[in-house]
Image 1 (cartoon, rainbow, N blue to C red):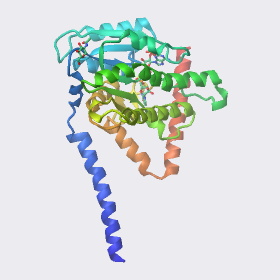
Image 2 (cartoon, rainbow, N blue to C red):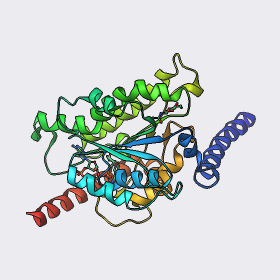
Image 3 (tube, protein in one colour):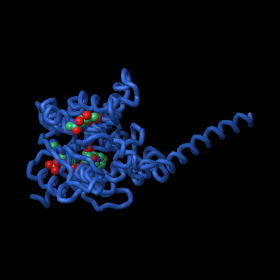
Image 4 (cartoon, protein in one colour):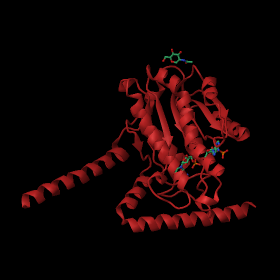
Length: 319
Ligand SMILES: NC(=O)c1ccc[n+]([C@@H]2O[C@H](COP(=O)([O-])OP(=O)(O)OC[C@H]3O[C@@H](n4cnc5c(N)ncnc54)[C@H](OP(=O)(O)O)[C@@H]3O)[C@@H](O)[C@H]2O)c1
Ligand SMILES: *[C@@H]1O[C@H](CO)[C@@H](O)[C@H](O)[C@H]1NC(C)=O
């Protein structure tokens, strides 16, 4: 009997030890320059969607500084041109050159987007990184049935379907590039895909959809292509980040967009399919999964209440 207890104890301890070692490895020891492999070969391009603000803009800047040419997406031409001007006002820190920046415009929430037409416009360029970052988030007093079906669909399109079908349209050329050099497709997700925060049901569901698409495609490409010649896919867990979506000031649990983008790019090429780039987000997740469920539920509800109140205040300020 005591032997059985001993072995159970040993297994539990080893499992915990593995988690701790993995934590130390991932946040303190792991090489964070694996993104360099996506720079191999002539003129590598990185695509970033939702690049006019927050995480997308900071990620675009980070990739530019690291030597990538860019294809940026936005919906507001003036704002996007301003961002491109800002990025190109300095030389890339790595290459010492002004890198090329191209762009395309599209309201991601709309129906009838010509995804293949977009991909065709950039055909022949060696895209080695695609960051599906665009996302739309609103929290308010409205219940699920108080939003129209059409508004729900706009959120589903902007948060999931746009990323899914943009990726689909780029797949043939990404696959061709991946035969010669590593190619990565990233989906920016959210902890919302695992938690049940009130008032954002379809946002959470859409993020979960992206996670399944990322993991599914990673396996799908490897069905008939060897691992080293196949496109890699990665889903990114994001906690709070200071951006247009969350204007509260940065602190340990809420990263600035710039800091988050630096950590994010540091995970590119790490070989994992799901990552939590920022350590503060890891700690938040640890707390949520360790405390009793009723407490976690209460914290989510309180957080939703706070966010709703803030959103109402902000909309009053604006009007
Ligand atoms: N911030 C957070 O706390 C947080 C947490 C978890 C996950 N995330 C995820 O991180 C990603 C980036 O969010 P963020 O925090 O950087 O938000 P943000 O500051 O609001 O930036 C969102 C970007 O997406 C663009 N966009 C929004 N709706 C669009 C539409 N319908 N069509 C085309 N472009 C559209 C915005 O363009 P405009 O400049 O024209 O508005 C902007 O470039 C999202 O996928 C979000 O879900 C963020
Ligand atoms: C893309 O890369 C291939 C080799 O990997 C190269 O032959 C080709 O010229 C590159 N295309 C462009 C437009 O740089």
